[in-house]
Image (cartoon, rainbow, N blue to C red):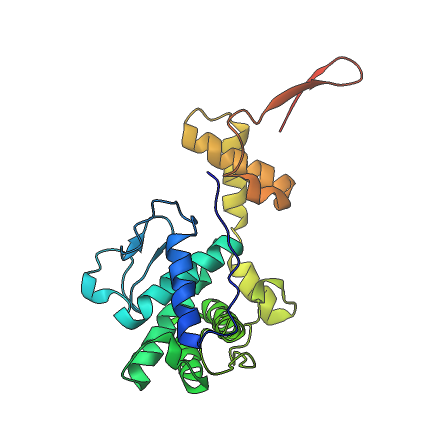
Length: 254
């Protein structure tokens, strides 16, 4: 499927509200990201995002759980535009839009993006810290910063918020740190010697159950080459091949 991508350029002689209206129209009518037949009015876009309030479950939500009416069209436009130009698996735009709406509702009477200011961005960052785990909060903060710069540079709001910086620092990754504390935490995540020997024994005994074959084979391959763990669920069906060595002996390999 061909995706129609268009870069939005604000018009100098238009007001911020007029540029905002045109940005939303363009994303709604001209972009084809997530399908040309995308149901714009739907609260949930299949395999893309749910435009629901902060804290609402991804399943079983109601129409009252939708983002505020004054924000939702911008939220959809921004999400579609950014995922079209910079697609990601984490889709952090959703996190940022939810905390932003919650900050608007908490501090003002309207959640329109036109009213975005430094105080609302600061409150959104506080909500991100309170609601998300540290790494997700950090990602949310970075997306808030990107959103603030985007709406400022594209002249979608009257204020210039391009200098706002997220106050949420990247959490330390204990999995790559050194020292006794880090090693202790890392060691707790490792299987014991008995478990390792049990898996090795299962593999050596040539199991017949598909689950045992998959588990023990995965274990054997990643023990030999740990960096190949990302291949496990991405391997094609016929991943085992046979080749002849220099002596004409058939070798099986992955």
